[in-house]
Image 1 (cartoon, rainbow, N blue to C red):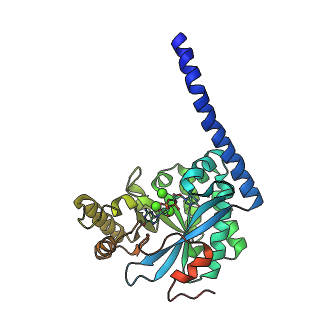
Image 2 (image 1 turned 45 degrees about the vertical axis):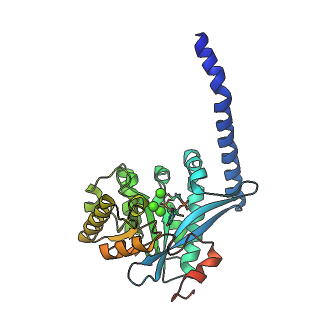
Image 3 (image 1 turned 90 degrees about the vertical axis):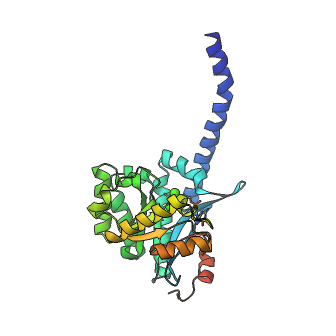
Length: 275
Ligand code: C2E
Ligand code: CA
Ligand code: CA
Ligand code: CA
């Protein structure tokens, strides 16, 4: 009993700090969403493997914090997901993505949806309404979901079906890194798979044989059932060459461009003209 009390006293202040920190982030995130300042969206170009023109942009959220500087999504998305703020955040990103889509009518714009957003029963209607109000074409908006979403309950799958019926394209993000099950691929619920960066990064100067085999197998599988195959996290010329010869359709990574603020997009897009 004595030992138990000691342990309790030892851990309490530590717990307290992390609980406080999360509460602060939650509070500040709520304010940022309410005021519409601080949170912003950057866009990372995606290129066609053949010839490398820019064909799409992935919307990636950033938080310009007044005292802590630019915060990466991994630092605040988990808290947004736990608190439900992810719904408002997702709306904000989607609205901005629609505006970009209207400005660059030749490009598709990809938006990430986290699994937590699928807990809301009217997610499909919510997304369809925002896109309709913006005047953007759902066919130019791609929704990225992780494997966990596709393995979800019937409500989740119904949401995806309604979105797809409304014209949105569905991409499986981080393909191969999660709870892999190939059964959903055969139900024609998706349009694209994005090979996870962990496989791509091992395609180095001395290509890792396992990663190379996995990338080739995923690409062949994807094409056989009519899906577009994108590789993400492409950083080197060796990786680009391997992926292009393996038959990947699209490439994304620092080799081409990082995620950029809206006003820098034009400078990396060649051969595309804004509306
Ligand atoms: P993700 O969807 O897999 O996005 C790709 C991440 O890899 C981005 O990190 C991007 O900046 C980074 N990246 C791209 N190319 C390279 C490369 O060549 N090398 C390396 N090392 N990294 C590269 P970021 O922006 O920090 O986003 C992290 C994750 O946060 C995203 O992973 C996504 O799951 C999530 N996320 C970002 N924005 C949103 C959003 O608006 N909504 C939701 N639900 N999730 C988001
Ligand atoms: Ca993504
Ligand atoms: Ca990804
Ligand atoms: Ca990810």
